[in-house]
Image (cartoon, rainbow, N blue to C red):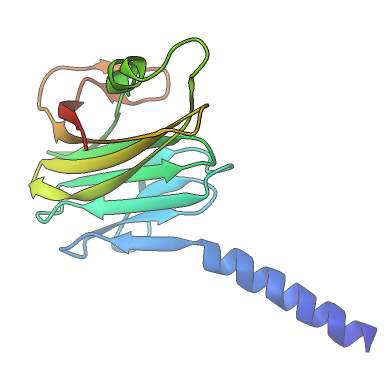
Length: 181
C-alpha cells in the first residue's frame, strides 16, 4: 500500500513539473515563448533562439502576448509584490529589451510620501494597438491601503540602444502616454 502511495505521489510530482512548461506560439506558428525555469524564445522545432529571462523563481504569473504580425512579443512576469516586462523583436535576428520602469517614479511619487510608500505594483497587458505598440494596465498599492490604477503604452522603437549586462538592449521599449484611471 505504501508503495502505491509513493508511486502516486511521484507521478503527481512529475505531472506537476511537466505541466509547468508552457509554450505560447506566435500567430504565424514559426516561434513560441517557452516558460519553464527560464523564459526562452524558441523556433517551431523547439530549438532555443534567445533567453528572455534566466530565472523565473518567484514568478506567480507569466503573461505572454504576441503582436499580430509575429515580429514582437511582450512578457509580463508577476511576482508577489512587483512585475517586470521584457520584450523581443525581430528584424534580421531576434533582439531582447526591457521596460525600464522610469514611469513608476513619476506616477508613484505623486501619491506617496515618507509614511505612505508604495508596497506593491502589478501590471498586465491590455492588447496590441499597432504591430509595435501595446497597452499596459497597472495597479500600485500603498502602505495605507490606497490603490492607484494607471495605463500607458509600450512602444518598440528602432533606435540605437545600449546593451546592458543582462544582454537587454535598453532604449528599445519606450513607455508613453501615462495616465491614471
